[in-house]
Image (tube, rainbow, N blue to C red; front, side):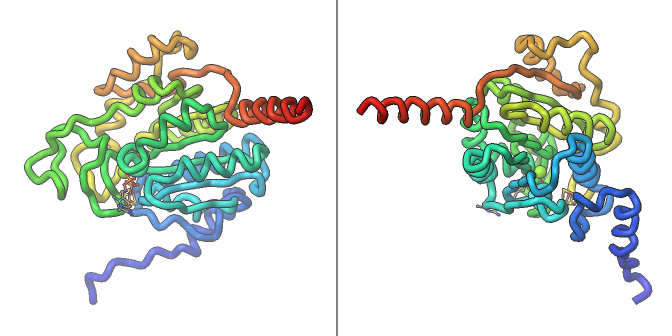
Length: 290
Ligand SMILES: Cc1ncc(C[n+]2csc(CCOP(=O)(O)OP(=O)(O)O)c2C)c(N)n1
Ligand code: SF4
Ligand SMILES: [Mg+2]
């Protein structure tokens, strides 16, 4: 009995959250993530961004798939939708098209996004659905106890790669650039100030915004995307990076050894809802002539 771990007193944590003044958006369900998981700073970043942009919580819907990352909607006192594994974007698209006034956040891990959900991403991006997609990349399947994911690095040893991972990792930023995403950024869970600023910019963008968040899984990754490795690797995008220059963004996205953080690319163009409105107008015009 002497070896039993001390219980975590969630009431004390709840009190800290209450004192921070952010409980108006944080729900009374405190995150069940492992202590030290990078995701804690993301929930804080989203809370700060929503407060900063003065969006009322009744106007926010958070949609997720399945995974540790996808538990996210439970921890915010907004509307939320915990969908099936990999099906975040179709559900988020439906919500936005049904009510364009809502701020819709789609959330998932690297597995939820780029393995089972990978085929949905190009279509949400090219249609420029006005939602914000936050992908938490820990390079592993956390919830199912540490298998390789599409972003696991070469040589990574996990339960499904005991003789080291031989599959080359995807480069999500390059993919998003090629999908014509209208806003693309990257941030790091170990830099909360940068993170909340990037989340704020992503939500403020009118169109499909994609924020790639590097975030350590402290329980199942002791060697790869750890805090100490990421801290040494990440670098700010250069001050003179022109976020309207896609070729420059592609070059920076290829720097996988020293992942740059910041705004890679941004353009303004009509959203899916704008285009649907045009179609409605055209159809009404035709009906009027008929
Ligand atoms: C259809 C289906 N296939 C597989 C699973 C098992 N499963 C649940 S979460 C998950 C991967 C989670 O990894 P990721 O999306 O990276 O999130 P993380 O847990 O790392 O935050 C898998 C394979 C499932 N729930 N449903
Ligand atoms: S298993 Fe990993 S990703 Fe999941 S909560 Fe724990 S540290 Fe975070
Ligand atoms: Mg993951």
